[in-house]
Length: 568
Figure 1 (spheres, rainbow, N blue to C red):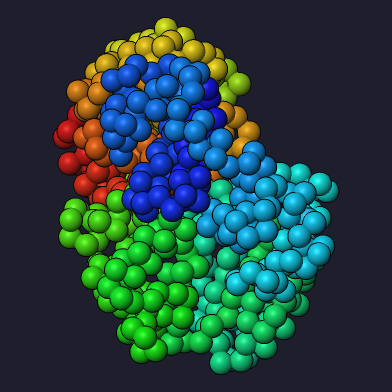
Figure 2 (cartoon, rainbow, N blue to C red):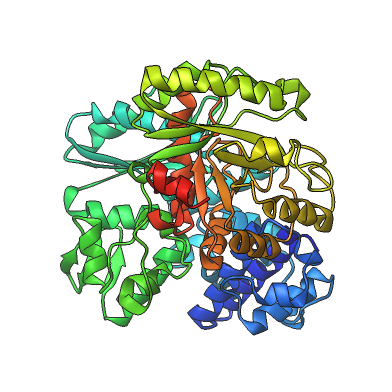
């Protein structure tokens, strides 16, 4: 099975267990395992049992099931649960507002076993007889069923594109009468690399004015629904945007609720229920008394937790850490980066001179950057040979004197098909920073790719591995390699792995960042800049690293330049 197929089975098990009323923590374990499998950069079918056992957050029982699925086998629990539930029941999960418990309720009360049954029940007006299914729920379900056959699968929007639209909308909404606060929520606030829609939140004394302003945004193509305090629209050539307006007393609770993730929110509500409290988007209540709600920190504190940054809210252990049963990280921020260790100039495929790049780096507060133009293998990029590298060194020295920023002499050297490097060791030894990257035969088998990367790591001149998986989000699948073996080699050799901030790369993934941290492997967060403006993209790499629990001490380019170079 492919990783996505394994993840789908684990998710189905979790949903069916929840329908049976299974223990919350057992359900959560299957959901977490599904996410781990989905995000894993290499095909699990090629891993040994020992490697599967080593997957982060996976216990022995789940590891056995994953190994069975990876080998093409069937998990008895999955087969047994599927016999319990009609085949069409799980299809209902794709509809808005239908989680496992509500699906079970529809099945028990109305004998609904699939989409056709749901259509008939809606047409007959039967859902109104069930608590929690009012006219608005019916309307949403009818629209979703109508759209199923007419529209393609949900489009995912790159984080940077969605963020640009969201910030534009926030500025627009701010001008409405009575607005006290506005914010991005949902998966975009958590920093997911792609999002299905955009969630916005506003606190205001005049909700009607905010609604009117939102719906008048010039890029609105279609209204999906609009009420007194919430509205949904589709933008021209863009995603769906949902806005919720609340009062300031509920601002913090609403931010927690609408930021999610769903798994994180469910876990918080379980904690509240255990203390005899109610947690919802309006606040944390004991009976009718609101204990917290105006700010997020107060909500977490009232639940006995430290504040949890949005990027960590995926129910991957952050709640346990915030309760004191683990270490809640002091996450890295963009201000912690002193330099950038991957940048290009017009000596190869960059779009600016070395001086322009240096001035761009200095303008953004960087103390240093490594000029890492391509090596000769990339003929299309006019890659550098040893002679041109020596010529470039002279220009670097001239520019550094004029601009007053430290420019490290570097290279992005190609990892060849056998793992050797594209330039001789004597040329690489003269440089201050060497990034080794794969740019060819990206689709070769896992063992061959692993050998290539590991051999490059073991070259003493290599400081970091660039964009390790070579993925292009939504366009090119990642290369497959044995992450555990690469991490072991990187740790043993003191070689860093790169978090490439280019928005179509974001490589390493967040879960790979966490795996590197656990393995004791240092990272570098780089812009892979090809123009001065690209240095601004470092914030995207920082966000990716934050989702992977990365702290300043986990990243080499938080060091002063002398400390960085002394470790070589």
